[in-house]
Amino acid sequence: MKVSKNTKTALTVGLVVAGMVGMSFAAVPLYRIFCQVTGFGGTTQRAEFASDIVLDRKITVRFDSSTAPGLPWKFKPGQISEEINIGQSALAYYTAENLSDELIIGTATYNVVPNKAGLYFRKIECFCFTEQVLEPGEKAELPMTFFIDPDIVNDRNLDDVTTITISYSFARNEAAEAEYYAALDEGVLSDRPKPEAQGGN
Image 1: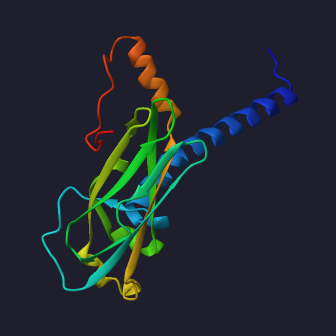
Image 2 (image 1 turned 45 degrees about the vertical axis):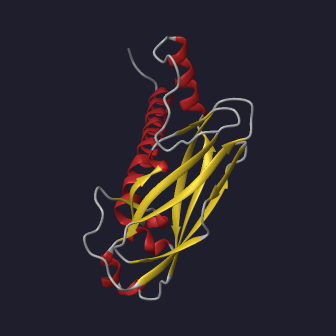
C-alpha cells in the first residue's frame, strides 16, 4: 500500500513530538541527579556518615520554612539559627501540625542559600527523605542531622560565606495519599505506619 506524502509527514511529526515528550520526562530525574551531584540551585547533599574532621571556622545556619497552597499544615523550625563548627554534626528540629480534619501526607522540598554552598551542606538524617503522614490535628517533631563539609574551606569561592540558610517547603502529596488509601482498601495496611520522625499529639 502506497503511503501519501502527507501521511508520512504526519507520522514523522508525531514521532518527533512523542520523542520530545519522552525526553522531557527523562529530563526531570536527570536534572535532579545533576543538582544532587553538583549542588546546583542550592541542592544539598546526602551523607552516609558524619565527618571525622571538625575545624575551628564557624558558620551560622539559619532555618526557614513554608507550605505550598492547599496544604493546611502549620510548619515551622524549632530554632531560628545555630552556629556550628565546620565538620561538626548538628541536630535541628522542625514541627508540623495538621490543622485539617483529614489525614494528609506531605513531602518536603529544600534548598540552600547561597546556592553555591549547597554542595557542602550534608544531611545524614532528615524528615525530607520520606513522606510525612499526619492524622487530623496531629503534631509532629521532625529532626534533621547535618554538617558542613570541611572541603568548603578549599573552595575560594566560598571564603565570604559566614551564614547558610536551609529552607524547607511542604506540599501535599496526593499521589501518596491515593496509594495509601488503595492499600487500606486492599487490606495491605491494617493501620497507617508511623514515620520515625513523628511525635504525639
